[in-house]
Length: 242
Image 1 (cartoon, rainbow, N blue to C red):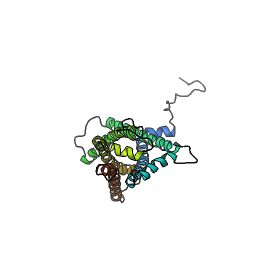
Image 2 (cartoon, rainbow, N blue to C red; image 1 turned 90 degrees about the vertical axis):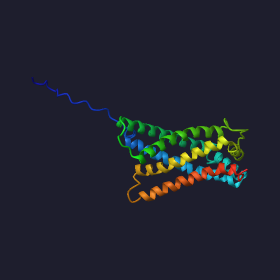
Image 3 (cartoon, rainbow, N blue to C red; image 1 turned 180 degrees about the horizontal axis):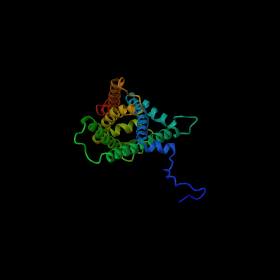
Image 4 (tube, rainbow, N blue to C red; image 1 turned 120 degrees about the vertical axis):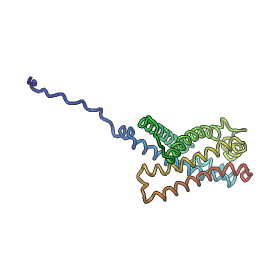
């Protein structure tokens, strides 16, 4: 039967178009890139944070002065506290992006292999478990840390606004404050050790020639950060910081 004039065979329906950003986020490499970049933002924060924490060894004036500077950061262009809140918002966005992409990648990996492998690579399995449980430990620690030393909600003794030096001593004068903090910092070290290497691979920095240097760099960075953070509660416990 002849087709009517102007008519054509029905063309197959086109899939709905995606915006570039939507397509990037929905892809596995997109999620891995978001995870890598957000991880590097958090890593930069950790480096700055440990440097600030170590000022506690220079006495209350130095440490309290550092705490005050955080609140006037960006002055006189920014109002009091605006710089600190900007940093908090960027960090929070990085944490959420990192957690969401990690969760979705994990679910995607499980969906791709609904049955367990007969033989699992021990190194890969260990790294996966470390990152997963380390992430959970750090998420819980962040909540406790903010409630302890930012809002003072769960702070032992009397929380004093504007006196971070004394607040730190109060926290690390309790056994549970030391245990929570040290366990969390060990999790930070393991997370950084594996995460730094994974981020380099995702962003195309890592290759066969640089593999050894990157692994050594990841190990050294994780060790320095862990030691730097743990030095503070140890300093309080031993009386070096009092």
